[in-house]
Length: 151
Image (cartoon, helix red, strand yellow):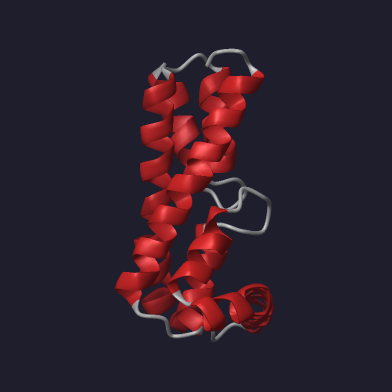
């Protein structure tokens, strides 16, 4: 059971799925539904400070390599293009709404990159990401519970 909790947490930290994948994985492995929610939510929240650390320090070192720089610039442009109008117009609420959508391409990774590029206040961005992750996790969690007749 601990193995499945760890895997669910790793999915929730992963940019390939975040809690959108961690929660269904944990529930499908018969982990307690409340434990799955809490672990996946907290693991997904952990992404914000990790990404900020990466963007502030490690990213600068990697920019020396052409391949990395080209890839990072494309990702940053995509994040900015997808969120710029919402975040610039609505600020905190625009970022929150973007992060809370439980669809591919939205979430804390892109939300953190966008808030970093658009120079949003870090405290506001953190809370917008946290609340957005929470709402997204609740949507995914309740959908999985209803679909599997657990709830």
